Length: 95
Image (cartoon, rainbow, N blue to C red):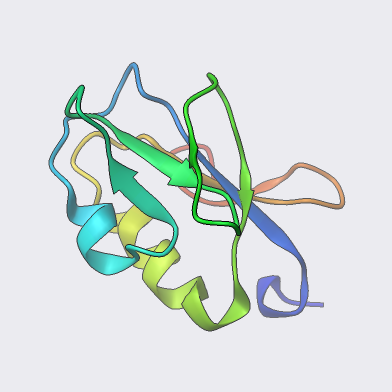
């Protein structure tokens, strides 16, 4: 089974966020910069999730955009993990 077949969730470590906004450019449906200049994930209902460590599901059609966000983020603060076992598949802690 590949990462493509599994349900994934994404979260942002705001302590490391540089406010660069690359994620919001790649996947505005998933990421948004708040008035504090930091990026946050959004719920499927388009609600900004500001709790520390808040996660949101990665919509399959946006998987590549979310993956590229994690890869290109200058703050290395975007974490994408499998919901089933919590293993990080993209981001700074991915194997």
